[in-house]
Image (cartoon, rainbow, N blue to C red; front, side):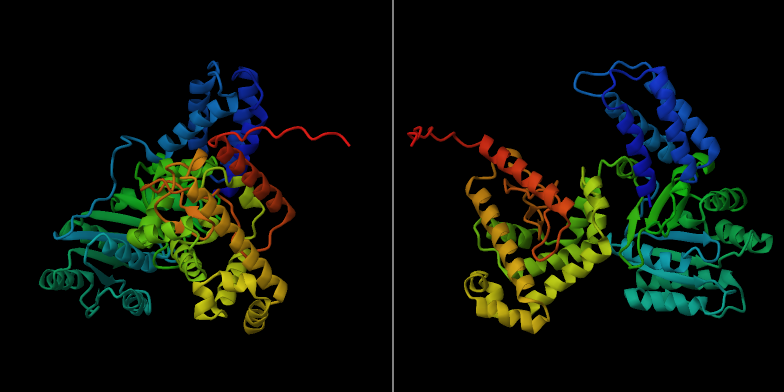
Length: 514
C-alpha cells in the first residue's frame, strides 16, 4: 500500500542527486514535493505540516559528508522523522506483551465492516505460535450470525470459541468465558465485541462497562486502513469515550494510500500494534515503524524477511539442503520443497519488496503472472518420475524424457527444455561458488534458509555458504527484456566479485600475427 508514496519519495530524491549540499533553494522544491506526496497519501494535514517543518529544520544547510550525496542525506532525515511520526515517545517502548501461563484479557473494539471478527482469529493464531493458549469469546450479540462467524473462524484455526445465551447481555458471557478459561488452562482471552455502524452512545456505554468491570490488559481498536482519515477519526473517538491501548489496521494489502498508518500515532497518541496484510490466517504482522519507514523509502526490510524465514523453515533441513546445493547435489525434489517454503512465507512480490534495492525490479514484475508461472513449474516437476526428481541429470541427457514430461503436464517441449537448462545453469553456478568457499561478496552471508533462486536468504546467519543475487529468476519463468538485462548485469557483477578474490592467471603469450 506504500508503493505510490515510495515512488513519490524516489522522484524527490532523484532530483537532489548531483548537488553539493542541501540549500534553501533545492530544499524548498524538495519539501514541496514531499508535502504533496504525503497529502496525496491521505496523511493528516497537521501531521504533514509538522513533519515538513521538522525535516527542514534538521536538514537545511547541513554539509554533505564525503561520499554521501544530498539525496542520501535527506533520506536519512526523512527516515528518522517518519519513524518518529509513526512511533513517537520512547523507541524502546513495546506496545504489546503477553505472558504465557498467566491470564491475559484482550478487548477488541471496532466499527462494522473493519474485519474485527476475522482479525480476532488471526491474533489468536499469532499468539498460539508464541506458546500461548488463546480462547475466543463471542460477545457480538447484535449482528445476525456474528457468533456463528467467530465459531467458523475458530474451527478453521483449531482454537476454541466460547459462546452462551445472549438474553442476559455480554457481562454473563464474559464471566462464563473467564471461568472456562481458568478450568481449561487458556491464558489469553480475546473478547470479540459488537461492531458499531456509527458512534452509538448506548453501545459505547456497554464497552465502558466491560472495561471497568473486567479490567482487560489491552483494549485494541480494529480499523480499516482503506477508510483513510476516517480510521484516524474513529480511533480518536473510541479513545476519548472508551479508552484504547492501541490500534490494529486491517486490509493493509489493499490499494489504500497509507495515510491512516502514518497519522494515527501523531493524532491519537496511541500506537499501531498489528497490521493485517492478507486474507490468510498467517497474514498478520506486528507493526514496526522503523521497518515501515524503510519500505517506504525503498530500503527493504531484511529483519521481517528473516523472521518470516525462521517461522517457515526448519534450520537443520535448511543446512542440509544448503550443503546439497553447494556440492551440486541439489535435486528437483529439493527445488520443489523450496517453492513450497516460499509459498508459506507469503507472496513472491511481497518477499522481494523486503530485499534492499529491489524496488526498480518490482516495477517490471507482474505478481499475478509470476505466481501462475511458479505453479506451472510445480506442475512440470510433478510430471517427472521419482527417479528423475532425485537425479536431475536424467532430463538433461535424454530428450525423450523431457518430451514425456511435456506431454504429461500439457506444456511444450521447449518450455520443459528451458526449465531444465536454467536449473542446470543454477546448479553449476552454485556448485562452482561452493568450491571457491564463498569468496568475494558472498563470503559469510548465506547459511540459513535455502531458496529456489540459488542460495541463502539474505541476512540469515550460520556459515560461509554463498548467497544468490536477489532477483534471480526461477527456472521456467519467462522474463521481459528489461529483467533479462538486469539479471545479466547482476551476473556480471557477481563474476567480477568472484574474480576479485581469485589469483590472477599468468598472461598468455601474444599470438604471432598472421
